Image (cartoon, rainbow, N blue to C red; front, top):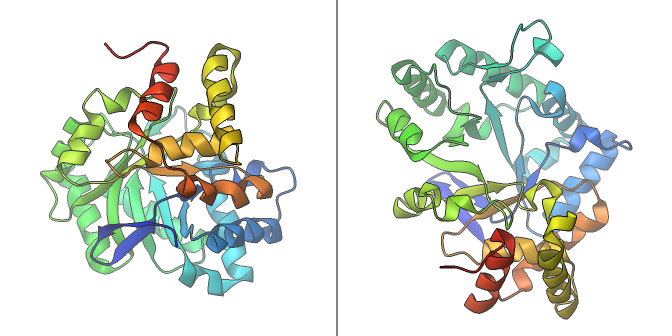
Amino acid sequence: MMDRRQLAPNLDISRIVYGLWRLTEDPNHTPALAQAKIESCLAQGITTLDQADIYGGYASEAALGDVFGAAPELRDHVEVVTKCGIIAPVGRYADARVKYYDTSAAHINQSVETSLRLMKTDYIDLLLLHRPDPFMDPEDTGPALDALVTSGKVKAVGVSNFKPHDMALLSAAMSQPLVTNQIEISLTASESLTNGDLAYLQARNIPAMAWSPLGGGTLFNPENADLLSRLQALGTAHGTDAATIAYAWLLAHPAGIIPIVGTNSLDRIKAIGAAFNIHMDRETWFELYSLGTGHEVP
């Protein structure tokens, strides 16, 4: 049984989350294939799906809605995370002159209604503000998020890519807690482990969700050959692959980091859960950390 993390009294999520940011990029994408991916996740206890309105050029939420439309029973077995706040000149915002952020109450409410309609659901388990907005009015944004939780349209709210001071500013204008911050964490992007981002969350018992746990593929770049070689050796020793070891490295951290895995390969999806079978001792953890940063610890 896969571990779970409770984010709110009425919401707990799987310790590994399946990310849908590349769902519509699969050249073989069909609703049936997307359903097979989700069912493969469920077979391992991965019940949480990570979305955003902007994913797939604002097409990914509709793609998930197609799955729920064909197999509505799946909705009762998953938790849906989605995000809002980025306006990019593509898809339904093709007429935008520039890319910008909108965390106004009006936009958040409109975005949630659109997400509910496209995903063919009447509630969102977890809504995140996708990026910190330098033009945010917390006295407008905060109450809007509170009201969405009170209404039942959203079970809980959080943020993504926020710094501690951004979270503090928004939280000061809210009655509901921010239950997570989705930030980049990987062996090749580990700055949050030492710059205070993760410590801020850990001190408040707020789980961090880790996007791009494979460093956006940088683990496999030539400049990381030593790291990859060690990951592969550990993978062989454990009967798995380098990616699974990289996930296990994140899972081993005492902060209870929640990796978001975004592969489109069914074979790789079926192997994700193996990361929980790997015990990583402190010395191995620091060995990989040092290889990822390119130097030993001071």
